Amino acid sequence: MIRFWRATFGAVRRALFPSRQQTDDGRLPYAENATFWRTIAASLPFAVTTSEFDRLQRLAEAFLHEKRFWGAHGFAITAEIAGTVAWGAALLAYRHGLALYRDFVGVILYPAPFRVRRQLHTEAGIESEWDDTLDGETWEQGPVLVTWQPDPTERWAVILHELAHRVDFACDGLWNRHWEAAWDTAHRAVRQGGTLPFDDYALTDPAEFVAVTAEAFFLTPTNLKYWDERLYLEWSRVTGLDPARNGSEPVVPTERSEAS
Ligand SMILES: [Zn+2]
Image (cartoon, rainbow, N blue to C red; front, top):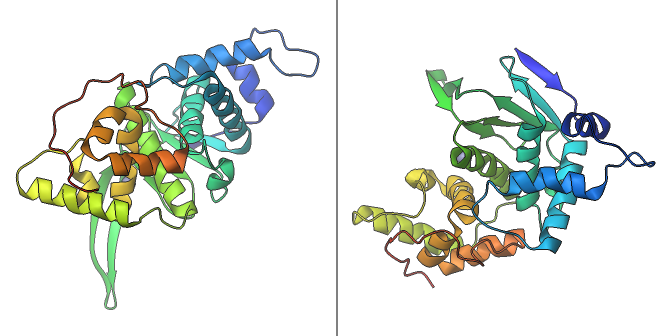
């Protein structure tokens, strides 16, 4: 059962700030909005500049205004939940804007990993069927599905992963020779018993490599930059952000990529 939560801007504003005084034009005083967004931004391991924060806030509020949110299995969408998804969307769209997300109407949130039925079709009909348990999913058409994970880092990972797939779709594929080089290096490292600075689910296929390295770009940026600066710079070019700038997270030793 999916519960529909219409994120009109007025409804979001009332949900976010039920007791706040609104200004005459119906907008909240800037500083009070900013406090809400600052709390969400603080759950990420990197700081943004004041001007980056201002643009991210505008993008996140516009995302809430434009998109719909649904809670699956009776899951209640709170301001924090919608705001966190919107902030993730803003991070990935910092450079190119919300046009990246024009192909979907909203986000379905699950309280726990969800099961989907898979079918393998061949010319002879359905070859096999099985159940998959997923943290998130998205297609080129249709909404984004994500699980609201209890652990904040895993929660960000799922949100950023699924939205990165949308950015990849919207850009007609981000893949270029730098991604190809990093992909080859990652496969070689794993073959040789080495470790990667991100989940090796990335090696499933190039689309997953893009989505998983987006998680690393925002959640362990220093490690990603150390492993392959060229790949880090690709994500920096796509998003217009530089989360490793302050080098706030410790570098976990991994073999450096030899890709140039
Ligand atoms: Zn994926």
